[in-house]
Image (cartoon, rainbow, N blue to C red; front, top):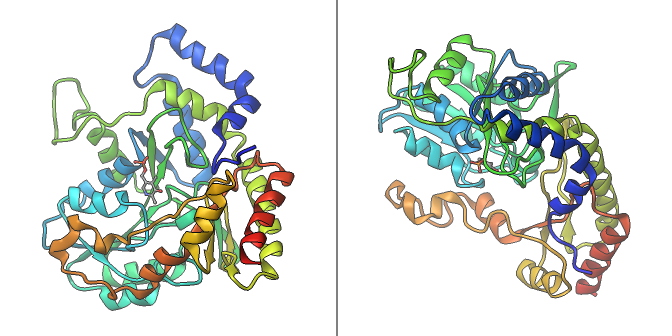
Length: 371
Ligand SMILES: *Cc1c(COP(=O)(O)O)cnc(C)c1O
């Protein structure tokens, strides 16, 4: 039996009896735009991230783009981020009118390196976008200290990290709720995934929340009256209903993911060719991905795929080497840790419904490859 990288069918079987009535009730109401479920989901996600405000939108990409748009960036304005991320992080910066400034990652966590951020800050830096990659938070305390010192805001790309936490000064800081703004994605494969696209921005800044609520409906609070030029970026009521049915399961799903991670970690301890993903001491990881570094990565990937085991390389090309950013004039070798990660990483199945016997099959297949 093949083992997929992610098995949404298994999740659906588990929650079918909760989610189907919720969807049918939206259909029966025929209120497809901004139904009451959207507001309820905003309250639930606001609670999850510990923020006062949460504003749903059409995608995780827009959840990054809309707060960036409120900064009214000129092309001389710089936004510092990591090149080892999904394209949307940097694409949103460019689409908001700013210039992405890439800095290298910390090889231990795959997350942006605060020392590299510090070195890249200029008077033109308007924002810093750390990505909580694979479900582990970037070092927020250090990044927030830099932002306070230089007057640049921090927008967390928390698309992969909903529910993740970081211990700071004895308390927990929550993914998305720690910077000025945080962006979540509800793309189907994310830890909290809808049945289509969706996203949400969270913040404690009332002015920002107000701007986001305007921007997502063409900049108009009153119908046919437009304060500014926004766009159409609402979350469908149907998506909100699906996500509300799932959100109560998120914490138990994260426990399942961590259980698989612990078993993988233990198995790979005795395997020199594989490095398990380290977790920073203060972090509680939600394992959107379980991403190893592997010797002979491409051959291992082909070996696993040949055995019907799903696995994937996130991400094969760091963003500074993408053709669309050629004008930034970055060359290979500029961000060696991001480039090395692109050559070494491989993400393995970690979804909560994965059976322990399937996990053992994956571990055996990896052991077999190196013998
Ligand atoms: C998924 C993702 C996004 C974009 O979210 P969409 O909902 O697909 O638009 C942004 N950043 C990261 C790191 C992501 O993983």
